[in-house]
Image (cartoon, rainbow, N blue to C red; front, top):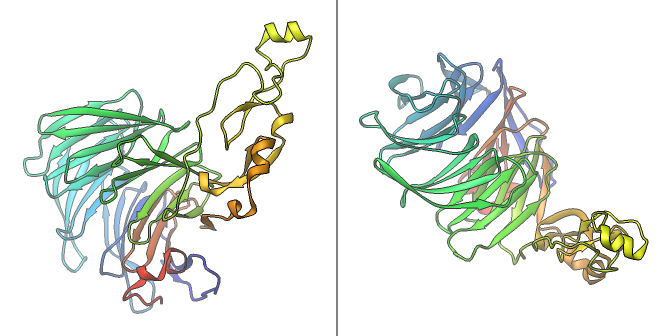
Length: 410
């Protein structure tokens, strides 16, 4: 069922501790059980499984429960041992797990959506389960009565969700690339704002209620940090992935952001440093360096008897430039560009060697990562995806020793 990995390389990178195998279809979510050597998984194969580590060092299922429809997501509340499962048929099912993690009893089934549930959050404070679905809606239901409290529809599939338990604000990412901030109340809601910055569908969100920062990852391979608490519209762009970003986790203790992408890429971003906002791209009918016309500028092309050029943009200053005036490439981590990007020749000359010092580290998970969970107190991370494999990682080498209090890698 599971294999224990014994090798421990000395370089600073994630160390694979265990692999859990046995699912017959994609594993859509996996969470670490706090204070236990255990993992809960839900899968497209319609199973909910609780895996506990045995004396042999391998993980074996102590609970193996099959439901009527593929499991798309889950929300687990450890203190109450309540678990909510989102399904492909739109239902949300609540179970109560026993103290010894050997038994699971059905509590309620909530008719939350008309289509696949994409994400959900259970709030013990309000006794609500908030969920998003492919029926283009977010719904919030009372877990005491089982009744629907409210629903809001979007113009695109709602793909992911974060929830502020104290203020009852919900952040909903959708397939159009927008993030909507809603204030939820009993029987009503209000739309606060819409965040626009991604050029592809939102794949993951993470909300840090302490610093009031929202992080979003999308199919445009980028991560954006939104400074919600600052109320000045400040955003930071982070580019280092080569595929869709599908999982995020901000570690408040060490001020690091962990992001994972569909190709197995893992990035650890240092957010405890001065960063600059990437500039807005400027519009122009001609190169803002050499003033040669772009190909749609018919009048200037006719007047100067020249062929129009293709428009590019310098990632450092944002100016519209031609290929000749932007022939150089450079990293510029302070603006979030961890791999070489196009810069104009003038900006290239201003970038010093120390400006190219990386502010992130990149690692290979060697499997598709659709979901990730972390236990910062033990320095553990679990990843899962469409290859049906669950991997457990020791992250203490890459996210700081302060996370590893009381944790001894096996």
